[in-house]
View 1 (cartoon, rainbow, N blue to C red):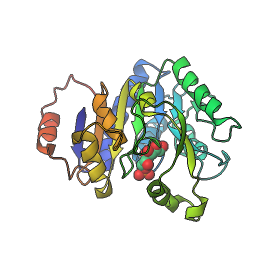
View 2 (view 1 turned 60 degrees about the horizontal axis):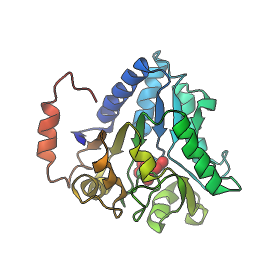
View 3 (view 1 turned 180 degrees about the horizontal axis):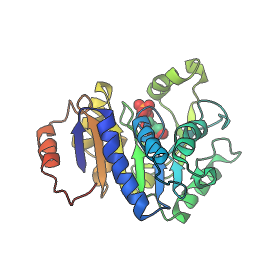
View 4 (view 1 turned 135 degrees about the vertical axis):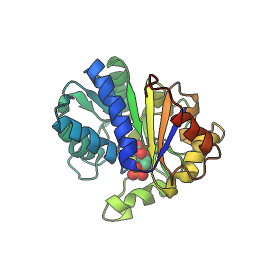
Length: 259
Ligand code: F6R
């Protein structure tokens, strides 16, 4: 694992965008795993600026991490809507190359199986973008999720529903179920970029990076990943016991060793 601690979200987003653009220039049909929520927005904004400046993302393929069950795609809080507004349009991706789990399928288990199949058929995710819940979830793999889980239906915890209620008219409007890539699905990505900003994420980051690998903190499964990079601001890094070491490592990183 590599832990990068910098002052601002924008600096962290720029570093990650540099790494993604470098990969896209090498492999124009790169497969991105797309998180939603507040945290990846600085990265998506940075990538959108690069698109405006001429970087061509039109062959890039995308797979969203998750989708609520029962929200129509045109609902402003559906992740289909989020991805269209913040990723597909601003980055100039082709809509037919961007996929989400079908949270409106009659047979949700079959939809989950189809999604896994589509990810595998694409050759797998190259760079998985992740946020982290205050309870340590990634995707909607809530605490207790199997560390080897695949895309499936999950019940959101009341903590997650409360956290996300800010986007809805009322708590009652927040769906109780979702389809989410599993932790095993996420582990299959070649590279995982996790972002965390703000003191309310500090405990989750510390448990993910320095706690035991445990279903109680789903993000801790990234300790088993071959190439996971955490991009954290100082507030989110506040509870890391080895933050001096991570910062020394970053300062001494050889120029040839790219993210
Ligand atoms: C979203 C997702 C979630 C969020 C997490 C943090 O696709 O999978 O794991 O990344 O809930 O949300 P924010 O970034 O809104 O704090």
